Image (cartoon, rainbow, N blue to C red):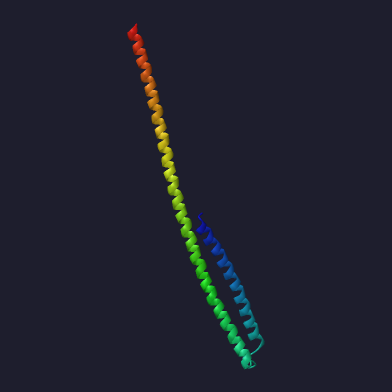
Length: 136
C-alpha cells in the first residue's frame, strides 16, 4: 500500500477516535441536563437555571453538529481508503497478468530455442553420417 493509503487509514482512525470522544462528551452533557430536569420542575427553576439549561442544550446541539461533521469525514475517509485499495488491487492484478505473460513467453522462447538446438544437432549428425558414408 502506498504512503497516502497509510495516511488515509491513520486519519480515519483519528477521526473515529475523535467521534467516539465527542459521543462520550455529548452523552455526558445530555445526562447532566436530564438529571437537572429530573431534580426540578419548570416552576421551581429560576431564570439563571433556565439560562444554564439553554446553554447546556446549545452545547449539546453544537456537539451533535460537530459529531455529524466528523462522522461524514470518517465516511469519506472510508470511501477514499476503499477506492485506494480497489485501485491497488486492480494494479496488482494487472501486474500479475503482465508477469504471467512474460513468464509464459520466456518459457515458449526457451522451448523454441531448445527445439532449434536439437534440430541443429540432428541435422549436424545427419550431415556427418552422410559425409562418412560418401567417403567410403
